Image (cartoon, rainbow, N blue to C red; front, side):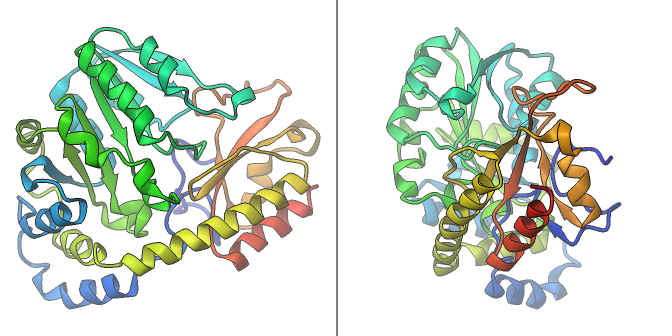
Length: 357
């Protein structure tokens, strides 16, 4: 079995359809592809180490000052750079959530506490109680919407966490990499309020929204410019390639593309949820472009991940998410995550699952 730390490891497998990653089902926008082709002649140059044009466009897109934005080699790059700069002694993480927060924190010897989300509440985040649980000086990571659950916390509730971090001299890191897939994302994104909180930062990426995973492009919006400048000094000078910068600047003009993706994801997410539930899976609510579901028949029918892999279909085995673990050798339910793709592709997954039901 391949390493399941993340999805998308298709290189040693004969995978036809990859549902283990949560990228835009429309693929890279055509306009971005055209810009990439036209930019090939510039790939012999070193990239702009300050990402000037890309940051200028990001600042206009989000209506924030350029000095508060740092670009990097994907959001994961910026997670590590931020953690290595701040070197927190203590941190608070949700369980389950994206694993790179914990990996980065452990790399600097940070002591980590966990706030366990519960199945009986569909893994929803209670921001008020979470704010009360925060201790002095802790760095708090909030993936919003959360991965792998797909549920988001409204901005006014996120502000409770920002206030708690300010009061307790902590630091809040908001991962909004899936925010573009939310209906009414303006109700959830904290970007407009971020300027009032120097002890906070927001992660964004082109990876998921624009299906640019292979180009590796993310950015960090800081509550104040001084932190952004400090983060800039932590990375090597050419961390964002010429094609990544060109593609990112072009992608920001693809407004209709994102609207089309949101409509597709919303429609297919509901259809997939009904199909999976009809096959006997426990499907959890989601606002993002993926679904978390529970297989209570795992021990009776064998490993679902393996069965699908043999058919060229890859879903995300969630057994290595803290809070969704499966004890090897013991019977019990198993958790999986499937990204939402186009209708015909989703139907292939459902047909494969019907054979097992």
